[in-house]
Length: 154
Length: 140
Image: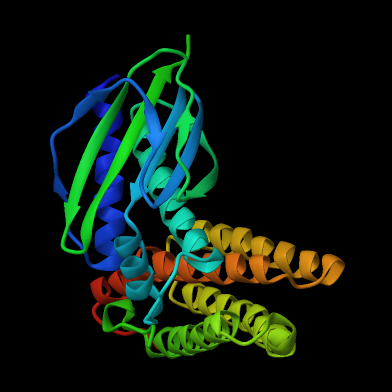
């Protein structure tokens, strides 16, 4: 998997966090992983189709998810309900859209499949025995992760 | 309070409408999220939602008219983005009219409105302000 794919998603995440939440990201060490599993409290899966095919999995801890929605809404949130999970799904969707805009400048034309949100569910994402990349990201309100599995169309 | 100073575009008409939009959206979210039984808040959810729908249209039209007046070069793209979002809002309203207003869908709709509005104001609308500033200040 090209670093360009990772960088597009990292850059888009950084931009959206700064714009919408006033939060800076610190990048952790990129790791190769065998399985892509939604193991955090709140997980969003974005499907990618087109010149690149695959999945992007965002995983957030509960406390961070609630804080993100509090920053946007100005309201205290005490549980991950439909409002909180939809807001999280939308943020991931915006990040995905912005990342694809960047990739389109490098002539990769792709689309995003609407986000699927898994709350507190351990769910493995099928990758057909291929490896994925795991990028941990640190912020002042908690640590979250992006897992990427993208392949160029054959 | 949802409104933040960083959302300011620098054009009084747009900023006032954005403030109103965020205020009404905040009220809408508060009603949807309030801990009273769904059936009891259904009517106020419906009222605030319909107001939001109307106000989104009023605001988009005013903002586009302003862009036209100042000959804003990004107007066509801005119009397209507004139209796509209006369509999305309308699809929720149609769904609510046909299938009734469920708590789950109302939560989803209010979350979409919130994230879309914040991103749009922080990114696309800021460019209107930058254009006006580059032209040497406010264009009335």
